[in-house]
Length: 228
Ligand code: ADP
Ligand code: ADP
Ligand code: ZN
Image 1: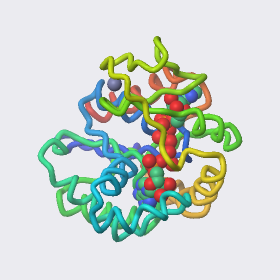
Image 2: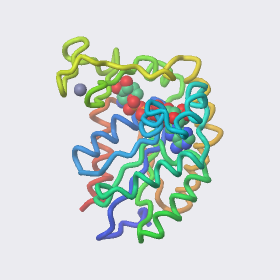
Image 3: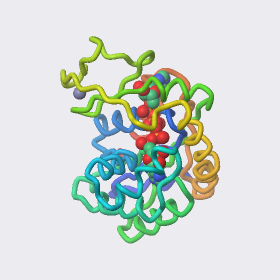
Image 4: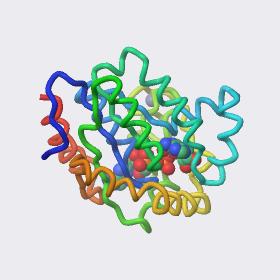
């Protein structure tokens, strides 16, 4: 079984991996190349925090401490987003699900739409190296393009290669201390999902310690088979 390669059903891909594994970078690539919509619960939660919604107010402290926001809040935000029409062409879930409860809820939600998770791709990385990846990360505030001080600097310092804006942002939780808590949360609560998707024949493991382009190539091969 290869994860249920079902024709005529919008593909649902999941990217699993600890902070810094490259989920956001690769989800953006899959969006551009295959037309899949990137759904990042981290981005949705940060937008809720910035907007000062009830959910955002509850999520803020947990995110700053590097813990996981409650399944209830995350599921409410994600299921609303999944209802929007652009998701019909297929989605790549970046940072969701992160708990068994979220994975079970996702399966139920997709089942009601006649869909299922087609592939859960685990980005396999070395934890220790993730601290450097995360603490060197910054993002264009205008278009969302991700950068890294060492691994992916913009061509001209401070200016986005993609849109030309001069509005680079760093996340409040991308500091060495919080990263350790986030890595712990990943191993305690998210890593069990590898077994969950392996049992359902949907798990794919990809070595994600190489360069961004090589990893993109490996992921594209998986996506090509699902979108064919
Ligand atoms: P995640 O969404 O899993 O937390 P990101 O995609 O934001 O991870 O990547 C974390 C940081 O590492 C970013 O600054 C990004 O530019 C950089 N990065 C992503 N993939 C790689 C890679 N394969 N090698 C080196 N740096 C990478
Ligand atoms: P990264 O993968 O780089 O750690 P994200 O942007 O995916 O970052 O998540 C940032 C923070 O948002 C997490 O540390 C957590 O507090 C919260 N978060 C994001 N997605 C979820 C989720 N599915 N469940 C619970 N908390 C989440
Ligand atoms: Zn930009």
